[in-house]
Image 1 (cartoon, rainbow, N blue to C red):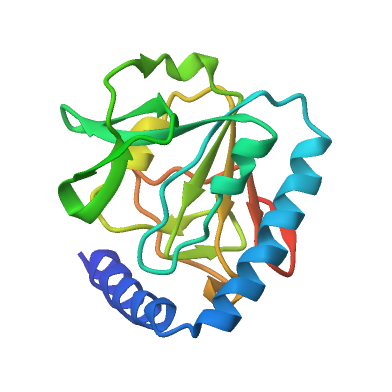
Image 2 (image 1 turned 90 degrees about the horizontal axis):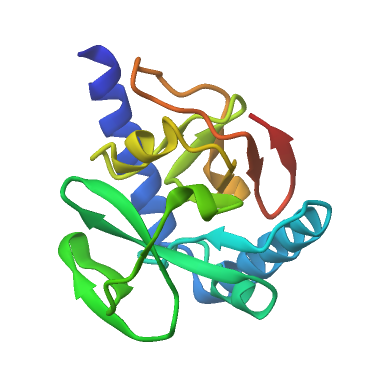
Length: 179
């Protein structure tokens, strides 16, 4: 119970901080992070990448579509399912933007899934929006799990619960490390 409360406080504080980022700083941090991520992905054999449509000053990874086939998540029957990004979108629950078509891809076909987080720690754990969708998805995902956030949103340690899944790698605008 105490960890839930701490996570909730951290989520609120860092989400507020992220929404207050000024446009110039956001653009600078995002450009640096995406460049670092692209450099990292060039060292891997990657064709299909699961990303997310940004909201509330999240990292914007849509430019990866210039190099890879990218897929975006939808919540379907309580879980995350990815769909190819074809440029046609619709609004969905939780104020998310999702592909407008319904042709899902098998998660085994994704080489990498890039995981959003409001805050990450040095062990690769994250605090998201609190619904646990990514943890459920990542539990049996066989590809590489990469967490992304701006360096301002990294702390030493996040309270971890049994269902939390760490990412394999965290990439920020300033650094990268194995989770």
